[in-house]
Image (cartoon, rainbow, N blue to C red; front, side, top):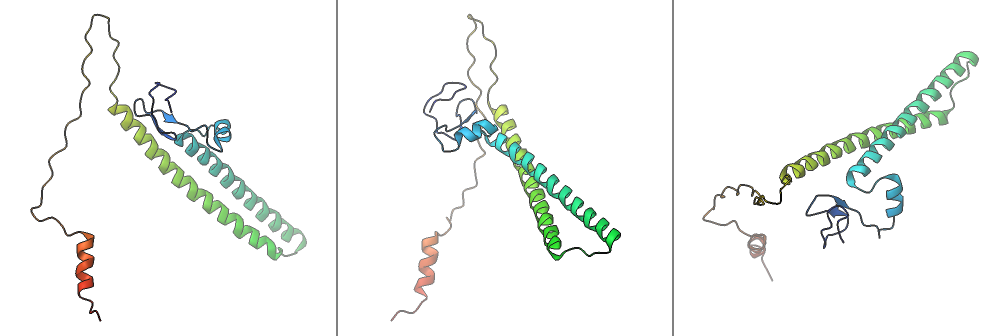
Length: 174
């Protein structure tokens, strides 16, 4: 797959371009057309759609819960008639939907912050392209600092196989 932004080849679909960081959509996927119509071709767009849907359904369930509660309260005040038992189940269901949507909203907001943080990191790591004259030499790309050397323990930890073998050796065999 080729990146539509920079043209770099040999890219994996449904991942980020190794050159420019653009999200590469797999248009051969089953729901690619639906995602394209809804604008959900990248993880950020999908998170934004989820946030909007969670907000709308949470708002709708809370409004419906309030309207039902107000209607049956006013009905009881006018006629003295009690609320049908099924309406209490509807109240519980709507309250659970509202809680579920709030939970989804919180999770999607955290995902959005995480994706925005990754976007900032990528934009910081990519070197900024400076306009070059024809006579100017191209500056070599800057390399990040190397990692600090780790502390090497003289005795390596035992492997899982060695630990399991020690446990099995303690079991008496017939």
